[in-house]
Each structure stands twice: as structure tokens, then as C-alpha cells.
Length: 171
Image (cartoon, rainbow, N blue to C red):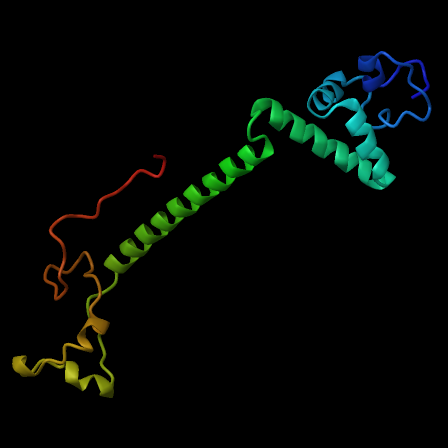
């Protein structure tokens, strides 16, 4: 930095901070922990080389990434950032599964509230009229059978004797 206060890296490394110090713009003296953790994981020499190879407009993003990766590596020395990413991907997968279960439950509730049979039949549906019990067309019958509404007491739909089992979303 060249001013009265050396940057965090020069302070930690106990060297004189110059105008050309590559660390000064990215590691200010008021946040020494930022450089300390990056230095601990990557080393000052490696950080300097990485920053010198990058164009100036990309250096701030690179330092931000290095700080994040260093923090992750300190928290999880084996997996680092990959551990955090895997954890978040697993969490997203579990939440997607819970969402699918909730959507299925909503669909079941909606289907239970629909009427059992349509009120009007088209000309093509004459085979559904049950005048003769022996001539029932069972192939097209399921199309018209829905879950019974809560107001009807008798139904043509087979139902399980057990009610739907509810599972907790937060297991």
C-alpha cells in the first residue's frame, strides 16, 4: 500500500508494504484474518503467482474464491468445497423428494373431492349405460370412475380399508 498502514499480508509476513504490493488491494489491513486463512491453506507465494497470472479485473473475484475455498478447507480438511457442494446437492434432492410427496398428497385430496361419475354422457358413451349387467364394457369404465366425493355414501370405486399413511416431511 505504501501508506502508513501495511496490508494484512505484509503485516503477517512482516515485510515492508510497497506501492506495487499485489496483495494490498485485496487484503486490507483491517481484515487480517482473510489473508491469514488463505496463506495457511495456499501459501503466500502461490497466492502471489496466481494473482500475477490473472488480468487485474479478475483478481478480486479470484481472491474471493480463494478465501471461500480456504474457509471450506479449514472447516473440512478432507473434502473442502466439494463436501459443502455435496451436502447442498443432497439437501436439494431430499427437498425435491419431499415436494413430490406433498404434490402427490395434494393430488390425492383433489381427486377425492371430485364427483364419482359425469352427469352427461356423449353419444360414444352409450356402452356405459348399465341396462344389462352382463354386457358391461369394462375397458372404458375406469375412465369415468373417480374417487368418490365426501358427500356420497355409496361408490363404484374400490377403496382400501386402510386410510392413506402420512409421513413427516422433516425426517
